[in-house]
Image 1 (cartoon, one colour):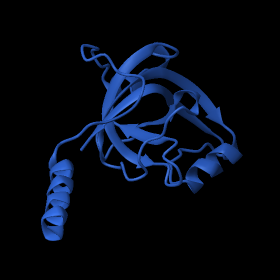
Image 2 (image 1 turned 180 degrees about the vertical axis):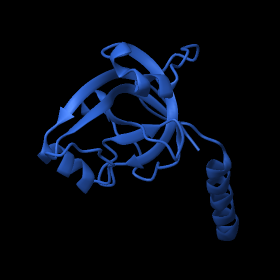
Image 3 (image 1 turned 180 degrees about the horizontal axis):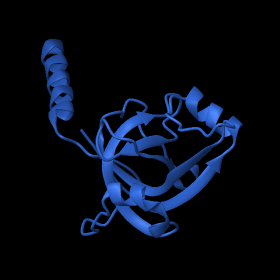
Image 4 (image 1 turned 60 degrees about the vertical axis):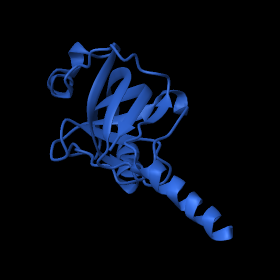
Length: 149
């Protein structure tokens, strides 16, 4: 009887991981929301600043400490944007690098101080710095995200 219980437990665990599950965090994203191409956002971020939009991409890096930010790019070998989560209200799994993402939120243009850039690099982020150590970045504050493998 004990062996059957163990076998059933293992079977359930394997079946759970075998499914292509979507990890959802934050507010739900409308299924019919049409995404804006991430390449367009990165090329002309001023056109999207402070507007609520949906974007899709792949996670190229994630906060290794808590999952409190991620880098989202059009493809794994492309540059992307820094994504944080509205009101620090949710995090993504720290092992989510490489996952596909659908996110709804707002685009922001920021200048990071040298200290802020140092902090992000210390957590694994790629930061394109100016000569003085500061960095200009396209940022995205997500109200909700959906991650898939």
